[in-house]
Length: 200
Figure 1 (cartoon, rainbow, N blue to C red):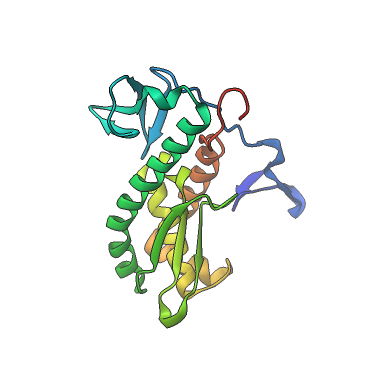
Figure 2: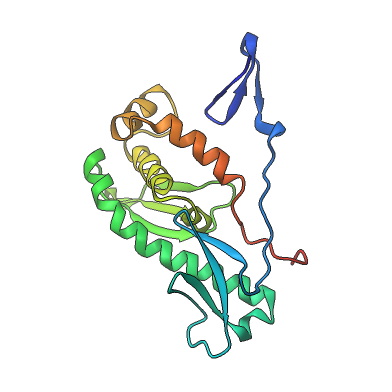
């Protein structure tokens, strides 16, 4: 019998194997009417706007993109990623203070960008205020999982690394942190990371 522990599969006898049996399945997208994109756990259909003024916006339950952008998939991808970054930045700013207060840490600066194969990072800074970077793709996930990543990174302000003390601290803020981590591992491997039809 096997169980999942912290992103690893643990087999009887204590042997651990990376989740190679469950490789990422990140989808590619096309920029056409009706293509599904997700924001904070909710699916939105793309709407191509022939007279759009803003490149990308959320309006009336649709993610709207200007028709001119969709003619160039690379520009369309850049515009949509930029929208996720801006929307995510606004959302995260509103969530940071309550989590920082709960964890008794100073609020770091927050940036939303591509952070490679991580969902978030924390870097200490001069004067005690560091920087938390969150991956733009994270904002496709439900809010409770984004909150988990925010709390995860805030815990690093007090405890670097992922030792036992770290998990005790995180568990104080989010008692169900193991369940959230498992859910993040599962949903995260299926998020859109910018892949577009045609491989560009």
